[in-house]
Image 1: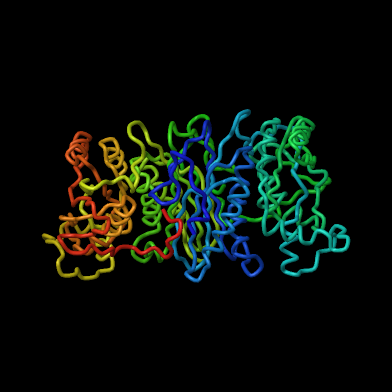
Image 2: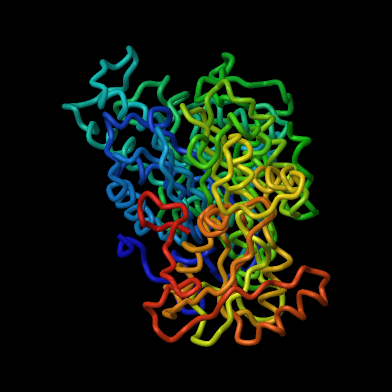
Length: 308
Length: 308
């Protein structure tokens, strides 16, 4: 199975010693850990172990994207029942690692009653402005999102064969169904988009992991601004509720004083320009969407302690 | 609970955003993840949640020590039943973090059926020779260990109120009992010792986490040398079996061409000089102790995949 993982460059040492040894980044080092628990973060009767591995690494890398960073290395901690096909899990992790250019350099493995994957990723900030935090938005900044939302939640609904809630967007001849399931099984962190946003002057940024409403409120609270949403792009086949609260879309929400500059920078790099969804206001209490209160409807964390 | 964790220095950002942002190390970056599962790595009817937290961070930092590195930062991933007193767990982690000079800069928290802690640590190599790997030993190198072994296993036996096996070392008037339990509950990674060994020319190093016999065989196998053990220092109150196979002592085993130079360097730094336990031989098949075969009797990993 060691062949799943690539060989290190000269002067580095990856899997097989007490620690991995890698070159330090030229500037700041980004560090983040994400936990994925079977039955909590994913239903393994609906997605495969390979998907679960992919999702775990993709979710962790989305945090690097949300800082405007570039991925460097990943470490994979796994606790699993003895009956788990660890190789399948590792195949999904290795596929994401290769596709998203983030080599796995180490990890640990233990038995447990329930499958749990802890992914730690490191990143760097190459050139240009510093990392983009949640707390940098100012009143008047526009809010943008890198793509339509709700696809992952709609894909999960399809996997469960549940009927759509009323209000589902038009779904001509079932088009987009496979894309929705794919969005759920194999999400793609917006690494190029995050870096482009940082270079183009985004003032604050967060990834949509919990759900748009929850995450935009996190950004507003950290920045001490109000948020007034006007338009939310809903993925074809998804409902507005799924777009607002579904989570796991891993699109990026950013604030920018000059949204056109950000959109131009995306176009210049061949990326789909982000869509304007609202603005930051001076009233730090304001959380509104089309004139009504914006309720945080996404994933709720079990404890508000030290989470990233 | 945020007050458990210290504030970052200027220019860094720790808990509370998508990732932590820290300064990069001056040279190589050490990275390691360790998993600790309740019921697998520790019996929570015998030790407290605080102890479990301490042990998880100490075990991870021992991997930094085994490279001759210096601790930089830790990330703490926790999956826990809702009934778990997370604050107690975090108190133990915070105590180890403060005592061992390794600030916690991020993490994640999820619910799960079983308590699991994933600790990722980063380290650096300050001045002098490169990190010390398992694979650097040559025939003729002496093997040394930083202290007597078996204390953690003996402490666990005491907590279980089990009688000692025959052959336990003299234990005058129960002296050392509390020290054994303390060694099990609050192990101390040998960070200063590891760095001193690197600076003094150690050619290979590993920490005793699985058990001396298993770990010394790991070192010999990685180096392609034989190992001939002559004397093993047994902690007062521990048995030879506990010293050979107990594990979790977190002492360091190192190879050195000039053991006196290493011992002198330890003494110069006010550290207990390491004890010579044997030597590396040219026959890569040799694994012997006092002329008999040395059997790997320590912790057995469930899968030999990508572990560190």
